[in-house]
Length: 252
Image (cartoon, rainbow, N blue to C red; front, top):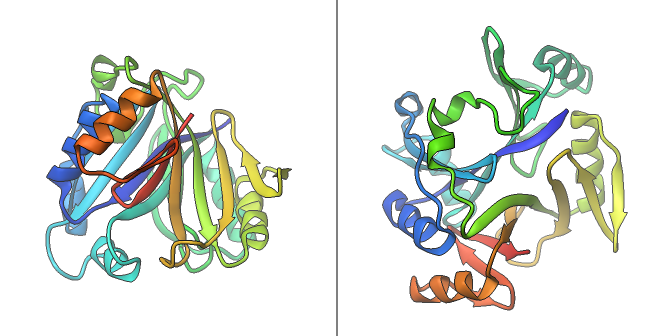
């Protein structure tokens, strides 16, 4: 079992991005985690189907999130957090690949490991085991206890892909595939890793912002409704793509 359970973005203006996501995609905040303050951040999480979109913002200078904003020239994608069945087995596998673990949080049935972005570039990857893993709509500890009550699929149904841009997409895809123990597939010339509920797509850099998490695919009920709302909020719209929080969000 391997799910793309949570995508994290980083923003300068957290409140503005929260309003954008609410108005454009019809999703609501289910949790604000006070624990992230120890990293100099504040955040919120919003359910997207059975998965989550998190946004973090620096509270002070010198945070990793703040340095990422500077390095990539503004808001953008930050983390890919995947739900796995056995975090200890994942820990052993990534160690054998020579990938350093920057955060290891074993908490009984909930255990997460974050991987060093210099060893696995493109985004900060986290593999997390969570109690109730057999149920895709089950508990997810980073999202608090009541996220199911906030879930709303009237406008946005699911998060179906993350797009990581790199100088060498094929090489980076192979590295990620080794970490998650999946194969790389060629989908119309695009190296892709299939997870149980979504895909990871690896593409060349075309926006001048360097390597990073540059895009997401969201399944929506009415593309035109979403595009109109994005334009009203002052977000760029091109075809079936809207730009929110520095991320290309493709409507599917």
